[in-house]
Image (cartoon, rainbow, N blue to C red; front, side, top):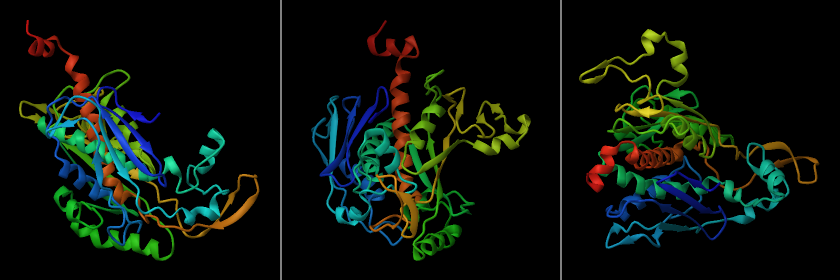
Length: 358
């Protein structure tokens, strides 16, 4: 499946070394003001080649809106956006066209479909996430009209934790860290791995502020379940926690329960979700990324003929994929919440009456 969402629905297309990637966003209510500069800025936050901490592939990631916008506002019809690829180096992959790279989707794609695009992984490449970010920007613009804001930042790199949470600092940090005090050590961890042609993993904290009560469709389309699905669909994401996540299993019920007062909840161990429905508190998720599998060390693998081989990768790759994953996590959070907001419109008769009268 190449589509995400039920009401606010996104379909992405394209490959890493194809002519372009892009998306079609369907279900956007008519009349939403579309800030094209905001969409481009979101893509700029994800694009490669911006620092020594990321891949040196140079892409402007300039987005072109093809449809669905009239006089600066959404028309209610599908919004199509395209991002043309500009800096592919397919020759870097000639030496591995018959080899399954460890940690990549090569082996599974080949066995499922009988072929694969060896040029950077094709459809399985993280290049596809640029289309998600473009779509997520539309979702963010809609959520802003509802008073909802999504923020993200690096929580951990190579076991170096961000103890302080500062989303504003993450926006200007080279490593997108939430903690100024941890920044130098986190950068050094990435650069140290890069110098020896290796990679490191990391974790992203993404939160949504101002989320109203009632988003989520039990039993089988719960808000936390869909958030987990959305996040784990991101390339290299291996685990997702909602709220306290695994830490909750180490607490007593008396500590884990979030007490309720007239002013609101006394704590937020639940991550803003109860029974699969938003409770009005901050929606919070942690996304854990594995070390980038593209490393420049000799590795053992198989080729398409089933022969054991040893090979060494070439090309340009991120030493820590979590860094550029921050804005992708934000996009998937925004897309999930936008979809849930539209789904919630038919949960009560009073909502229908506001539109149709009666």
